[in-house]
Image 1 (cartoon, helix red, strand yellow):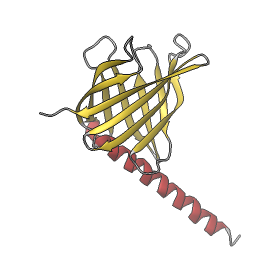
Image 2 (cartoon, one colour):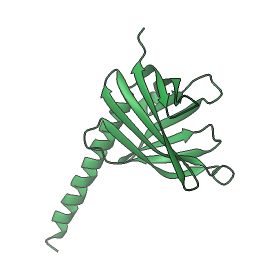
Image 3 (cartoon, helix red, strand yellow):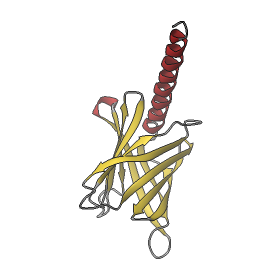
Image 4 (cartoon, helix red, strand yellow):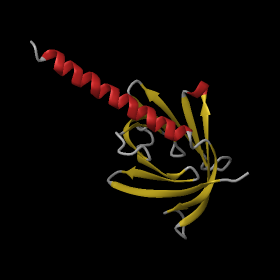
Length: 166
């Protein structure tokens, strides 16, 4: 019985670390607020196409909304939010489904990895986004790597983005 308080302290310490990590990751996303331009690599006949993105802190600071290629026919929205000691994302996809992701622990707070958890409308549209990796180089540059899963096939598209000036 004397070991129980030590185990409890370890568990509480781990929970605190997880909450701090999720908080740091969420702060990293909030710092991306603004307009971004760049190229999507791995798409189309040339392998590259121009892309735009906006990040907005919404809902009283409780969520970050990423809009990819706003105003186009392939516009998509991803909402990031805290979930107790974790960080979640729901992606509203042009593929007509809504995969949900949970962030994995981060080593440095500048590389955020979101893995597929579950989703809605997957029965009618089973091909889905499987993974998202956001790498922040500095306050004006970041990349997004979206992995799309269709059956046994996975393809990854990389968005290389720079903060739009003005």
